[in-house]
Length: 99
Image (cartoon, rainbow, N blue to C red; front, side, top):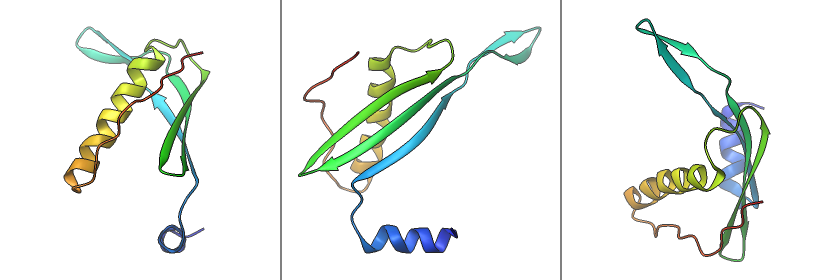
């Protein structure tokens, strides 16, 4: 699918689900150089239903160095920055389930 076709599709209707692959990269400085460590791979899902945004985060593989709650708070903080720049209301966490 071409980018223009995808953007047209996104503008023409409301989305109910957006899925992302989230790769968290970790590095160690060794002898002045960045050396990559094992990465964490997560699936992030945004579900839009009746004025409610549900975020789901699934760990796929990796050492899981960052706790889920911290990662979700970083993601929500970044989304809120973009929303506020567009003069839209910020997201707030009402319920947080960590399993």
